[in-house]
Image (cartoon, rainbow, N blue to C red; front, side):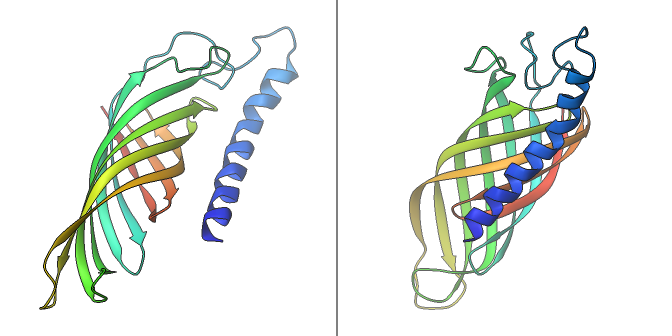
Length: 185
């Protein structure tokens, strides 16, 4: 239920944020078909690496983490739209989550993720990603030894850039909901 609500909210944000660009492109039929940097912009693009710092809510806990986003394919897979493909490397730490032993644990997550991004406007993008990783569970009560779990996770997200070097980002996946700031360089 939470995933459906999150997907619906992110879809609504993506559609609503692209409406001004769509209206602008249709307002002047003799002008360019889409604003520069918008979804229908077929020109060559370059994107810079960024770091995202975020807080997140995993199952029964709270956490913080970071992602390094490295652009790999700036002009994407679909020739007719403004898309790109990035590699994300990260680390997350969560506290108070419930481990396999039934008690509270601290967990450390080390994901590697592929992200396919759609640039709706120069400031707004939405993406889907697929990643693999390892979560290391460290017990904070006696009787349970540390253990690791390997996983595959999918996620959807959106990002709004206020400038070339600063933005905000929200992401929902099968393990948690993330909210954070993006620092470009």
